[in-house]
Length: 506
Image (cartoon, rainbow, N blue to C red; front, top):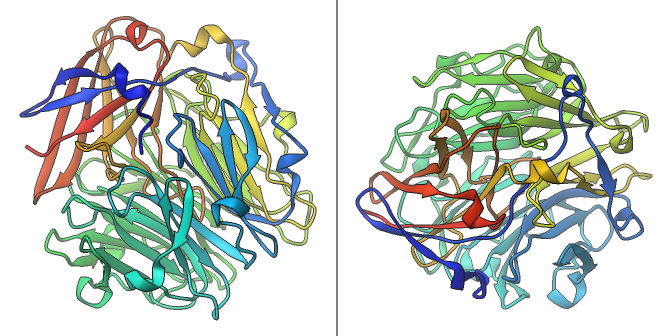
């Protein structure tokens, strides 16, 4: 349910082959590379509230349609929490919302499965005797409907993802398991059908991370699966007919010969080099990997020889332009269960590569299990929420305190279907500007950070320059790649609001 007060700001724009809508809500910058003379500045928010240990997953969504992002956090051996965002201040409403389950929650994903305009929540657990749940959002109250919809499956759940793999306009559900084959449920509009066998995507290896994106630029969504305990990784190319083919070995992306204690964990998709192709970072037990997309369906690991190549025993990662310079930065969580002094890493991106620059106030210790960027206070810069499952850890939310002048250099884009539903996970959004041509690409979230998926807008930081912006969205529906262009976007007219783009099939 999109905030109806915001919809009064809608303006009509011209799209390729169709009409679309644009709409608004906030954008801003933050942080900067050390050599520029600017410093990253983050402040912990409501430290007492965000202090409970054992957090294992976190995910953002505007569940109540009031125009700001709320935060779900799942815990080990403690009630889950739903933090309602009231204009930048948070309160836990998990009990009254019906989400305070107390089992060992390991995964969460937001998605509008029933196309009613508000995001619903899928929650996965670690115990074999507890069925995963799909909580339908009924005006801010959540009811478990997993059983009646045919998805009440149990297992050691790791990465759920709502994606429209078949291009029929609604989101399907993929669930990665560490102890059994991964499962794909097709949404038929009334229930979910288990299509794992016929789709051939049921990887039997110990999967803990999944990244859905268009790896070969043919329009449909493919699935990279990150596998642990020495298992090779998989990359399931979407054949466009409801089936998938694992091409990881063919592409040299399978990571063969890993020791039992090594493996891939979390994934993060982003256009790190601003060439329009979506690249893939894989946090690993062992050297981390950055798969650069060459644009022709092939990938090259460009991490060796860079600060990203370290063996940090990494778990989770997320891309975000925290300093609004037009280049994606990367936050990497690490995990050492026996060592509370393990630290996280923040890599600041730029045209010459990455610089490690984690601010002292964010030097997290312990076992970090989730990282999610989001502009929770609608000031234009990206803030960050962490999930730390160490016995002495917390789950802090850090506010990004960027120079206000940099805040004007951002564009925040919410992509929905024509009816205003959050059903466009996997859409690629690109922007260009008169003064400098193509700028960058973003992916509408399909799961990442580790065991989570958020629903909300994508954020672009903008390098210095002038002129109106042109935005293009591309997604797969009705059997083909759909594109829609929004021309002549003025940041001054937006006035730091979200730009809502309603996509329509040609």
